[in-house]
Length: 219
Image: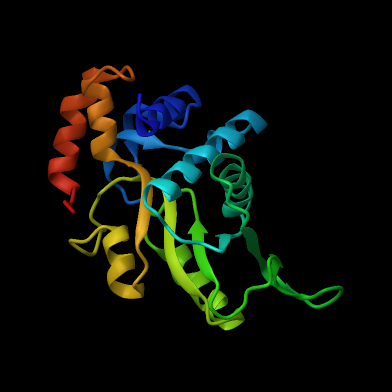
């Protein structure tokens, strides 16, 4: 199997990718759901970091620093940093932000690598729904130093248009902020995995394809 196929099976085995009928935050009724909160163990986090590392390597994303937005992005940045070192001999740094600026001790907004002008920064997140997180962290990063955001990496791209746009959140991120978003897999990869019996759930294929035809976008 490819690393994408292994990741899709890993999501199913971890209870992160499930099939059925779900009402999303948007109000849409979807035949599949992704709950990254079900990654809970050290073994899962270690494997998750390896998949992020594979995605960064495959797409040749240049980075000096991995940034994990608080709070979900923190363990992702750490595990990916370790995996990149172990698998690809990358000895870069990581950092994450605080929700509130610390006014004692070392102080500051960031923990880990103190950003410097020219640093190539990759943002590591779980999913992208509306782009709100990106909109919040970019000013923080740019206020710390004149960094170069070389990309953002997420787990799954639903390739789904926003409620108020014909563009997906990923397309909007590129248009509005000039940030290219990479995903380990997208919904087309999940459909292929179902069609090729990499995972069970083929009975949901018709519903998924119909949902994709109604709400999906193409790149």
